[in-house]
Each structure stands twice: as structure tokens, then as C-alpha cells.
Image 1: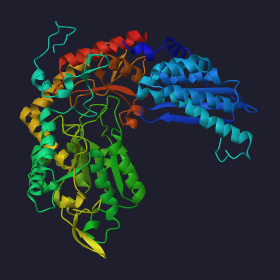
Image 2 (image 1 turned 120 degrees about the vertical axis):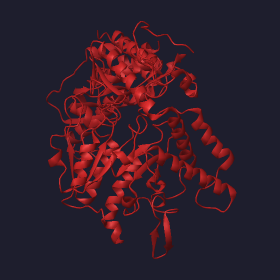
Image 3 (image 1 turned 90 degrees about the horizontal axis):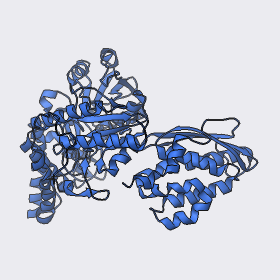
Image 4 (image 1 turned 45 degrees about the horizontal axis):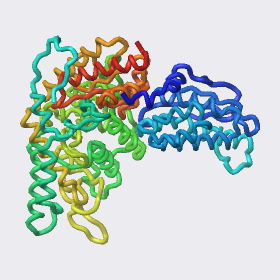
Length: 160
Length: 436
């Protein structure tokens, strides 16, 4: 059975006991993202303290991969600056594109912590979007939150 | 290859079709997936696999007759045109039409429906008076149902946006049927077109077309039937059905991808302006303007999908040989068995009619505590191909309060062993995720 390579115990733990789940105040931006091929959804809020991500709160429905991914992301990005968090998101994307190449996972293990367990998902193209949905939502929400915090910044133009 | 049947003691009626003989006609069914697993293909509702006869027909066309149809003065062009038109005739006979001009080849069901939707909006601005016969505008209404595939919903939403017409719809009952209690008010003298699916791709429901068509025609509305899930699986006779348009896809009925069909009553097709324009569909072209060919050429702009149409003709021959009554009876037996096997599994809920009355072989279900994607992943690991998600019918899953479903669909090569594998696979998913 190949299933265990995707459904690592860490992933199933996050799925059964998600970290940081629930929508909380305060927040500067809220986004709603869907995966139109399967109907999975996430509503995600970002609260900034200066440029630091003070809280990410979320509600959503979806498969174990999408739900575990947002939980592992929560652990990773709280306390990081927005650029740091987005860089981690880029590295998570690299992991998702690794097609199961163990050397990529090894290099990223320290930075991605629990999220490196998603390496097995990269072998299943149909599931990569599930793992990435929350990271896309975070990128979107933090850009909007920054534009609220710094209305003159060139990233502006979007409503929180 | 023999397969192990998990519960050999169960009494099962012999199936109408010879599954082992049919499987031998489908090359893909002999391959393995996911590290040597035997392929159990339960996703024919998304696209069907192809028998060797269809593959051979396409190959023979390219190897021996390939040319652009309806143009050219050489022998190959004649042969290609004859084969293409013979395929049209086969398709016409298959659905009970005695007029080949009523068969328009399209890319798929989606394009066939869009053809009608765009012809209707083009009618409003057509300069030829006869092409304005079915023009719509503000105050007119189009009726669909809550059960439609996105392909028979979004084109009508868009047509309403373009023309100012209003979209209305018939709702669903809790047991997965159309709610016809307000048919008399939803379809009224303002209704110009009713678009309804014959067989739901997600619920399996076979809709009662007769009262809907009777009501629509009594108020002068046209009726388009989405036959994507019915034409491949049951006998369909357009004369008996009485609708004005029927759309279906070749790839869901053992044919190639890239070929679909719009059947329309000739006198109606004849009054519709074109959708796509260009070569092949014209009568006379001058720099100042053009006139158009009669149907079906009016709706087949450009060099058509020739090999695919010929492949579809071969698929029609294959299905005719099996007998569509037998195909229908075969799938009914499998559906009854699947509903029975799924009902035995705690936590499994079928979304759609719970019995085989007016029901086809699309069996959608949820497994308590496990998301459909995860169910599908475990099944895939066992070599079982199913569809997961909202099945391009998002309003339906929303109506039944589930985010998505897992769907198994059957066809001529499906057997009881496939359903046993599915049931065992669902139990394996429950075990893996600790849901029971």
C-alpha cells in the first residue's frame, strides 16, 4: 500500500486535531478561497502586529490533506513577518512540485517542520491543490492586510 | 485474468451481458495501476473506455482514407466524406431519427448546448427574418432544473445575461427527484425554452420527460434534453421522446473524445442562425456579406472531427450489437446490487434515489467521517477508479448539504466483482481513517 506515503501520521494528527481552527477577532483581512474542481473551501483571516503575523484564524471544509495543511501552516507562520511567511510558502510550493524527490524534502525539513510530511502528496498531482489552497489564501489575505496597515503601499487597491 | 469474489455465497442473477467477453474487447482493462493492481474502472460516467472496434475505425480512417470532408475532388476526399456521412446516418438511426440532416456533429454535449444557446441569442440580431423566429429578450423566461450538470446550466445563465431573459428552475425533492409540483407555474406562457437532463450524472435519477415536454409545448416553449448520461445507457428514441433538441457526447458512449451530437427537429434547426461561422457552413460569400448553408452544415463550420465521428459510428455499431435494452438491463442489475452492497456498510449514505425505479447507474455516496477525496484516494490505491467532488453539479451537492460525493458509474464491461471491490474498498477506507 502506497497510501502511507501520502497520509503520514503527522498529517492525520493535524486533520483530527487541527491547530488554530476557528475564526477570531481582531483581523485586518479575511479571504474565502475555493478549489473549484472539488468544492473544498477555506475562509481565512490574518491579524498583523506591525508586519508580524500575530494570528491566522480559519474555518473550512475539505479533505484531510487540505485541512491538515492549513493546520500545519498555522504552526509555521505565527510570529513570522509577512515576507518570511510568504517565503516559507514558496518553499512549501517547491516541496509540492518535487514529485516525491526525497532530497528536496530533506533540504526543507528544518524550515517546514510538520509541513514537510506533505512531501508524499507531491506524487499525486490531483491532491497538490488541496495542500496549497490554504497557502494561497494566506498569501492573498496577508497582502490585503498589509495594504490596510499601509494604505499608501503599492500593494493596495484591494478591500479588506 | 480471474478475480477473487469476496462473497461467493451471495445469490446473484446472471447479468444480461457477457462481461468477460466484453472485457476482452477493451484493451485498457487488461492493464494494471498503482503497483500491479488490476484496474477496476467505475468512472464511465466521466468518460467511457473504448473497445478495439472504435480504435480500429479511427486508425483505419487515418491509414487509408484521411482527407478533408466536403471539399476536394479526389478519391480520398470522396471516401472520407462518405465515411463521415455514414457515421451521421448511424447516429441518426441509433436515436430513432429518420432524417440525417437532424444530426449536427459538435465537440461534445457542452458545445451542443452552447450551439443552441448562442443560436438563440444570435437570433435577436439576425438580419434574416426567419432567423429571428426564436429570438428572446426581456420578459422571456428559460427554465432549467436544480439537477443540471453545469453544461446545461451555465450556458442558459449566460444566455439570460446576454438577452435580458430570466432564468427559472424546478427544484428537487429530498429523495433525489425533480419536484414537479410547481411545473404549471414555473413553465408558463413567458417560457421560451426548457432545458432538462434526461438522467442525472450525480443522482442517477431518470427524469419524467413526458409531463415536462407536454407542459412546455402547451405554452409554445422549446425543449432541450441533455442526454449525456442517457443515450449511452438506455434506448433513446427522439420520436417517442418528443423533445426539440437532444445533446450527447461520443466519449461517454464508447466513442472517441472530441465528438458530440446535437439532434434537433429539422424545421427548428432550419430557422436558427449559426453559432460558429467560417468555412463549410456558407452558401454564398461576398465581401459585403454571406448567406448560410442549410442544416446540418450551417452548424458545422470548419473541417470537422472526421476520425472521431467515424469512431463514434463504430461505437454505435458496438452498442447496437449488444442491444441497448440489454445495456440498460445490465446496468439496472448492477445498480440494484451496488445499492444493496452500499446499504450494508455502516456510515455510507447514497445521495439519490434509494431504489432502481426510474434510476440509472450513477451511484453517488458519502462515507461518514471521511471526505470523498480521501475515500477516492484509498480506492485508487486499490486500483479502483471513481470520481470524487461535485461532479460539475455544484447546486446538487449544495442542495443535499454535502461538500462533495464519491461516485461509481457502470457500463457494459462492469460486473458484480467490480462492485464487490468497491464495497471492500470503502471498508478499507473506513479502517484506514479509523472511521468505524
